Image (cartoon, rainbow, N blue to C red; front, top):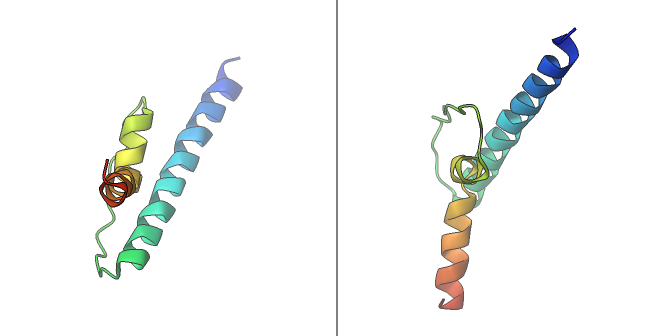
Length: 70
């Protein structure tokens, strides 16, 4: 049957959502911002660019480029 592969795919999507939520919480704690709205929508397929943007890693990369003067 097709149930096990479908459920495994859903579990990866749920794990990615959980990782994004934790990354956003950590980014907010580092920046001392008090934003409680952490709603987002992770569409399928979740590309790496979208995951990085939702988790705030694109902000970290921009900061590092600025700091290094690139």
